Length: 272
Image 1 (tube, rainbow, N blue to C red):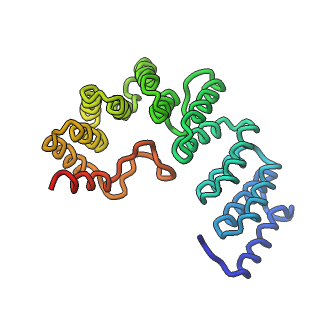
Image 2: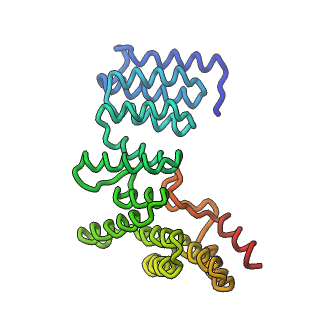
Image 3: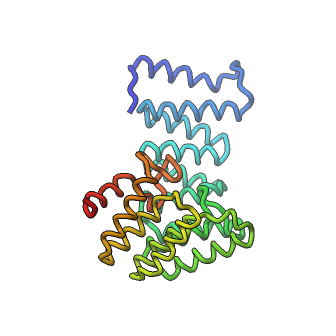
C-alpha cells in the first residue's frame, strides 16, 4: 500500500476537488468525469478508500456505465471485492455488456463459482444473440472450461468440440490451440488416459513451444506408472517454461495456468 503524509493527501484532495471548477481548462462534462475518476483511483491507491470511491461515484453518476466498470477494476485489483462487485453490478444494470464477461471471469478465477459463471456467460450470449468474447476469450470455450471445473465433463467436451466447429467454419487460424489442452485435462479427469494423451499430443503438434501440454502429458504418464517417459515430458516442459511465465493476462490468472514451480516440483519428486 502506498503511503503519503497527511499534508500531501490533504493537498491532493484539494487539487482534485478543483476538477469541478469551470475555470479549469476541461473539455466538457466528460473531461470533468475523467478527472474525477482518475482522482478517485489515485486516492484508492493512496489508501483513502472511502474518499476515492466517493470521487468515482461522483463521476459515475454524471457519466456512463464505463465509469462503474473502471471503478470495479480498480477496487478488485486492490482486493476490495465488496466495492468492486457493487460497481460491477451497477455497470451491468447500466448496460455495460463487457462487465457481464468480466464478472463471469471473476466468478471462475477468484470465487470458483463455476455455475454462476456459466449463467453469466449464457446471459452475455443472449445480449449478442450468438457466441461472443468475454475478457478476450471466446464464450463457448470459456463455458467449456467452467463446466469442466464444475465436474460436468461430458458437457465440457461438447462445448470444446462446438468451439472448434464454430471457429473452423469462420477461420481455422483463429482457433485457440489451448482448447486441446483443456480437452486433455478433461479426459484425464474422466479417467481416460489414452484420449488425454491424444489431445495433449495434438496440442504439441500445433504448438510445440507450449509447456502446458508437455506438463499435462507427464502427469498422465505418472498416473500410469510410466515414470521415465513422464520425466522426459517434464524436462521438455522445463525447457519451454520460464520464471514468471504467464500465457495470458497479467492482471488475473488464466484457468489451469502452469508455473515454473509446478514443473520443478515434479522434476524434484520423480526425476532425480
